[in-house]
Length: 195
Image (cartoon, rainbow, N blue to C red; front, side, top):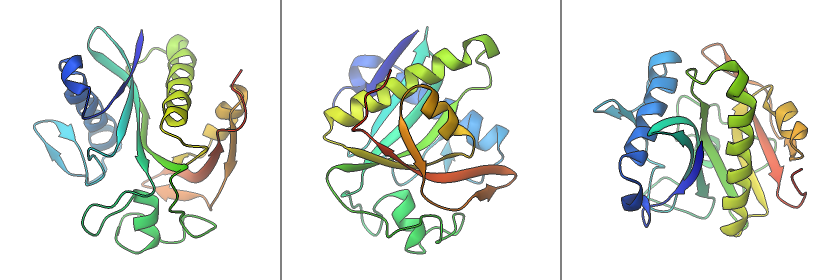
């Protein structure tokens, strides 16, 4: 099992990994969750997949097992900034504006984590290890990018997993229901050390 943080600067070194990650997102969010998201050629993407973002992937033999996107809260592309802030600003009709219990931050030390997934193809006995690898690389990459905090929308039960691996993750908004999938906004402090 390998873990790679992709960027526009390094994706050429990793063959089909970026496309495979977008295919895995398509399988998770469009096929399985039946969310109405942009897609092309079996890949899911949106306006936040820009050169400013990074994509953490857990993979083995070209198969993407898990992933997460990191986007700086200071980024702007046309009218869009980052998902949580744009939802709060009323630009996204699929995410409620009252998702976060504070004004969405814009600061160089705060990044957003989004499009978090673990493939359903990952065997149950491997899931925790895959999740741990994903979280560990996400934290490492975010710290290298200068982040001391991450905000994101994650499944409602994920903060328990985060605490199990030593991550300081607290709920930062109400429970959201996306077609039966319960999610919450969280704030993740990078100040604590993972175990």
